[in-house]
Amino acid sequence: MTAPLHDIRVVEIASFVAVPSAGALLADLGAEVVKVETPQGELMRSARPGVVGYPSKFSESPHFHMDNRGKRSLTLDLGRAEARRALLAVIARADVVLTNLLPERQRKYGLDAANLRAQKPELIFASLNGYGALGDEANAPAFDYTAYWARSGFMDSLRDVGNTPNFLSPGVGDHAAALALVTGILSALRMRDQSGKGQEVAINLMHMGFYIQGNDMAPVMTTQQEAPRHDRSKPRNPIWNHYQTRDERWLFLVMIESDRYWPLLCRAIGREDLLEDERYQGAVARYRAKESLAATLAETFRQRTLAEWEAALSPHRLIWAPVRTLLEASRDPQAEANGMFAEVMHPAGAMRTVTPPIRMSAHPMRGEQPGPELGADSKSVLREAGLDEAAIRAALA
Image (tube, rainbow, N blue to C red):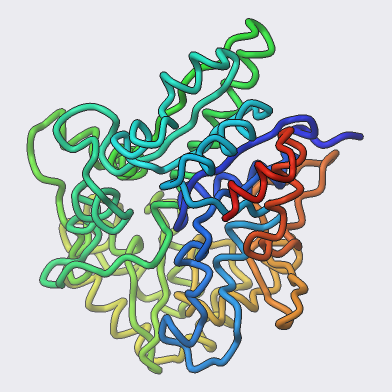
């Protein structure tokens, strides 16, 4: 069978994570994705492990390749008129333009939706920025650290009582936004199939922050009160809480249906005596005695290592998880069994990577391709767009 997007051409004018990772997912679905970069290449190409804090001499950026797999690379200096004209010729053959250029830069280069869709009404113009296309901050620079994490309230809400705010890991909000961007593009393509007309698709990182934490935002906005902050020393439900083990690791209990799981947990941890304690008879009683019960459970879990608790808890049908490090999680046999990781072959060496988070029975999405070498496809892309050799030389000068 053909790939879902086998006849779709995408021009990606973007850097960093959110939009490139959306482009990679479109390539996974079979689209031809042309990545437009400066002649120097985007910064993420140089984010090698040794540069970002790993004691490694690996010469490529694994996360660049994860977010740019399967694309073609076209290098152009958009400050030059010849390069802009060449890019417009490439876009004339495209179905989708995908960009994180801020609105003022789009207009500066003639790459805004109004201009491009005036020339090609069936074009789908998909864009992403920090704070939305309207308002005073439409052109404000942003990363997911700022717009998705700090500005949306996410950074403050995800910390226990007494703790400082947590630093966001790279690309967390960006990858969430990429999935939303791809959803919008696929929907726009479907509508174009029906009407023949393109449209604009717009995603912003702050909105994604609100949406991802929507289960907190909805009651906050309705009540106009700050969300209750989790306190693991006195949680509302002591078996929905995280506890430290003897070896200073952590495990996370998520038994939201407290009455259902309470007796099962007590037997699994060898604390059947708690079932007879009058203070803990029923969810309401356990809520009222939450501080003493949390302290009792904390003392119990401190008596064994995480590995010992895994052996004790795993045979029981409980909802819980060990708190893994990233390295440990990368070796998870369940993840391996479900194809969540793949090996990417590159002249610099093999890279392990995360595969696309979508599984289709009729279209494998293995994520095994590397990103393109810088400028590797510049001449061929421009030839396909109809430029002669003189125009190509001028565009790439």
